[in-house]
Length: 358
Ligand code: ATP
Ligand code: MG
Image (cartoon, rainbow, N blue to C red):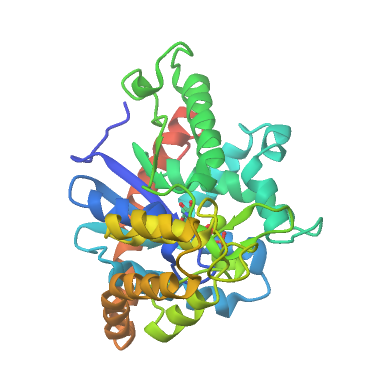
């Protein structure tokens, strides 16, 4: 009954336009997207409505960030001929699905969501956050299920949201499509369900730390657009140098001859993640542990590594910035395509809900 029309399996993932893309996005999600764009039908959502959960007073900034993120996608190598890049708020079926899905999420279950709790803590939202902030995980369920994807490439912080998405898909299919609760997750669609029980796909680094050291509770914070601890895909060599030279390392090491700690040290986490010269990393970590090398040469090496990775992306970015009409056109074309798919899902969902009247 679900009329799966696509030939390739689908993926859906995306970003909130609260800034530009950084290295955390690169290893957490973008690398996977690039590797998958030939084998999968890809939908990449720019979740602009969700940016309003924390920045409702800055609509102009959100608009700018939508274009920045789209520019980042293209500069990073996402090909609009193969993949659909679209703007969330221009796909109204997502908002309609959010309403129906919100009835399938127990309120207390939502409030126990560890990702929400972490965000409230790390972004210092206190208890002044809006009702809409609590609604965004439900919106995210709709962002995903509107496209009925099999896989959702994300960073670790999103796993709690994806678990909620899986629960809602099962619940919907059981309640409204007559799927037996004993059905294995992978068989929900074959058993007559509208929504697949999606699978997360983590990147090679599940949660890249930021350059700024630990948060108020002692643990290293994830690199995040909102925490001022990110190295961006558009950063030039000078900014990369400044950020790396000033980055947090081992706070107990006062001079180069002190033994250093490699574990939980962002300098080494970054080398292990980005430096292709594995041998240099292992050997130099050993010198660092023994107090035979200072932070400065290790940081300089890291600057080199990161500039090599980022500079080609930055250059493509500059070229795209000189052609803003092209970026907007990519978004418009993608959003039209996304609308068709999400509208079809909504139509099928209403049929399952027995609310198809027109
Ligand atoms: P914000 O600070 O506004 O929440 P963010 O930097 O967390 O922004 P998002 O747009 O929330 O970025 O996340 C987009 C995607 O990138 C998600 O799949 C998320 O898991 C992944 N991601 C974000 N930061 C990291 C990170 N540091 N390491 C790995 N993956 C990440
Ligand atoms: Mg985030």
